[in-house]
Image 1 (cartoon, rainbow, N blue to C red):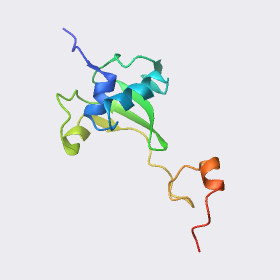
Image 2: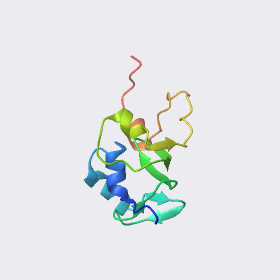
Image 3: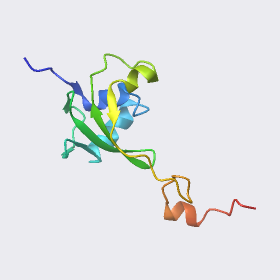
Image 4: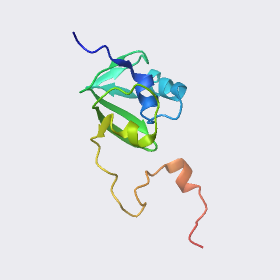
Length: 113
């Protein structure tokens, strides 16, 4: 019998990839999440070990492979065991790994003084 799976919004919240479950739901329902390359538009979609999830988080795109399904929202070290991060680290450059946001960064005052 196949493993049942876990709702994708619960998985993101349990693994501490989303601060709240409602935030995870909004990212998914806005069409910003993919599972195994397919767009996911329902927060009730089931995640199983081996699935690859792609979604935006903290100004970068996260790509993770589900290793196991958590039973609860536990401490961060326990949560990190449930997935493998497949995305490369952002390049260290003049922005220090920050993503450039034209509207925010152009109008920002010069902090070098």
